[in-house]
Image (cartoon, rainbow over all chains, first blue to last red; front, top):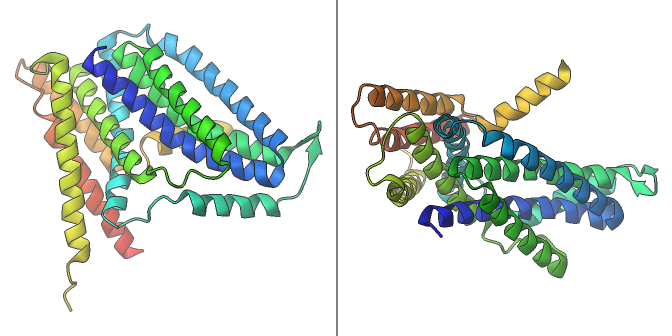
Length: 248
Length: 69
């Protein structure tokens, strides 16, 4: 396996894992309060829609010339990745509250318990819709990452494999634990995903714009190191700024 | 029409998020990289530090907005 294939798999796995932990919280809230049948049907329907999106868009993107694809995908990933990274840095430096699955679960439970019951075809539609929307919205980010990473690297199957491995892992742990996976270091994972998205975004968009990286693909780990250093330095600077006494 | 607008809004917030200036900074930096490459100069070095600057400015804006709220 090429070193960049390893990065591709790891990025798809981590990004998908984080989103699936969030989707699991919503499905659990729907299942506990509105019944498992509706929640699982909602989950299944969303997975079908997401599979169709990846199956249709993935091969379609491979028809676009690779340099144009890398330019567009790189720009999208860079804009998208900077959003993740900015939030992760703000969380790590204490300027933004940490993501808390237990708190989100409690909020979802409260909302689902308060909603009126409407049964059609033997299913509670609130539970179905809650699970469907939750999985679809979280899953769209996964689909976006699988399609963009996979097509720009010319290996959608490997990116999809990374996402599928995360799906299996989160699903198995979710079934065993039957509670939000609050002990998953989600904030650290989001930081790592932000770094990966930004790294790939820089690498591909520069290549798509016509730049030649010294050493070709071997430059990718160096870009990764640069992004990690900039992110950690930003966290350190912002922490110092937050803790500095304000002038009277 | 309403659905189309909602679809557009979804993708805007999905890719651009709450700081359009960061996305504009990214696009401008890629544009400069393309110009450098088209002129036949080494262009690979520009985007990493430009991204670091865009990120830092975006962080500063986010903190300032939080302080105002």
